[in-house]
Length: 342
Ligand SMILES: NC(=O)c1ccc[n+]([C@@H]2O[C@H](COP(=O)([O-])OP(=O)(O)OC[C@H]3O[C@@H](n4cnc5c(N)ncnc54)[C@H](OP(=O)(O)O)[C@@H]3O)[C@@H](O)[C@H]2O)c1
Image 1 (cartoon, helix red, strand yellow):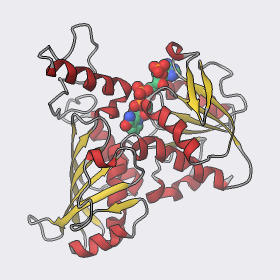
Image 2 (cartoon, protein in one colour; image 1 turned 90 degrees about the vertical axis):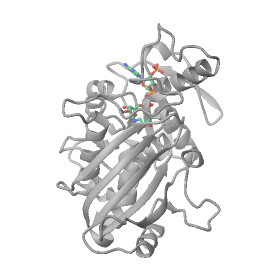
Image 3 (cartoon, helix red, strand yellow; image 1 turned 135 degrees about the vertical axis):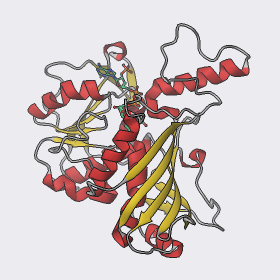
Image 4 (cartoon, rainbow, N blue to C red; image 1 turned 60 degrees about the horizontal axis):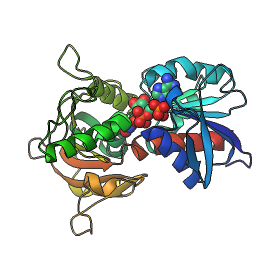
């Protein structure tokens, strides 16, 4: 990194992703000058602990980004739509974790292990980070695409409730306690976070249902995977499922490659790939579970095997901490590259 320090803003600092961004900046000794934390009006004045000191949460407003070099947006698409352009106008570079700019052709969508080069083609001041499921997919698919090309991808995701933010976490906690106490899972007055009860359940709907029977999350994973891999026409069929885990999401992945890639060769490629921990038979962790990957930084890949249904087919199981590598760490890694370039 260059020797200078950066004045940084984290918007959504009291949330699942924003809180993790703050912790990761501290853990990785990001060269921060001034750090400013923003959230909704309900959190203004709350103290957030950062490296042993407490910082107060501020409201967003017209002068919020004066002097800020780098702004992490972790407060949802509506807040990004309104305030990210203001941050850029004030001279900041924005790393946005929301859906707002992901499909904008002028905004790079970046997973550093796969397409860091896209940062060099940036035309504006905004860089977007994909959904956690997209990050799991592209980190695993990128090396396979490089080694053997991709014809077709079929995947089912198993997505933790923290993917729906702190209200998702609270909902699973509350419903679990209620069910175990023989009460109705959710109180009448609760605003629903999920389409159905999530405690002791799996819901084949993440985000909004669309008219064609797919969901907003499936649409985002398909568009994001194509954009990050630079494969605009890659055929993908995705089913996204919300599962009752707190942290840690997984993907069951079936890949058809252009050229034959034996499971041993695929394992060698994945073992050497950046950001991946390959789990193999005989290892202490022969395959990763969602609970194993919570609080970790890597994308874990296991159960690499031939797909018996097609000649150039592979099957894999991929897992990651959706809040860390699936959002906050990815955003900080993007910022680290940007600071190296400046
Ligand atoms: N969670 C994941 O696994 C994940 C993965 C990839 C991407 N993302 C994306 O990351 C973003 C944040 O998600 P999250 O899971 O961290 O959600 P969250 O836990 O609900 O946190 C939302 C944050 O935004 C703040 N906020 C809400 N409305 C605001 C407003 N009007 N002005 C300023 N701040 C406001 C909240 O402040 P208060 O505390 O005051 O309400 C809170 O700090 C979303 O766009 C999400 O799609 C999440």
